[in-house]
Length: 106
Image (cartoon, rainbow, N blue to C red):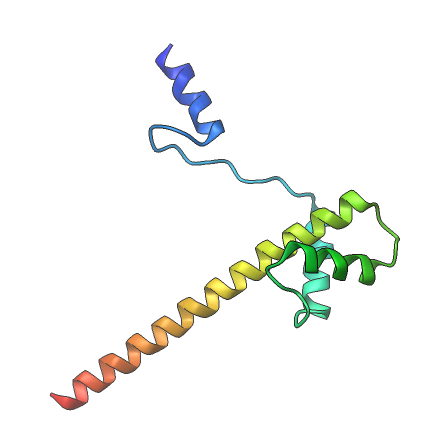
């Protein structure tokens, strides 16, 4: 009985420190979103609404509304990951500079 509870708790994301399952996205959504991000990276933002407008403009009605929304949502995820990587790189660079300064002062 306990094993069933722990197994189910992992799926709903609660309890006992289990990992929460991620979202499943099709290859089509991922490839289209990455293409839009490469071509229009400066216009992609962390706002779903802005990305939704961009995707509908770029895809020109060739895809369903549902697919366009999924692409816009994945673009938000990609942009947030990109910003997170930039912040980590900047923090690492600052730490390296601080270490260099402290070693030269000694």
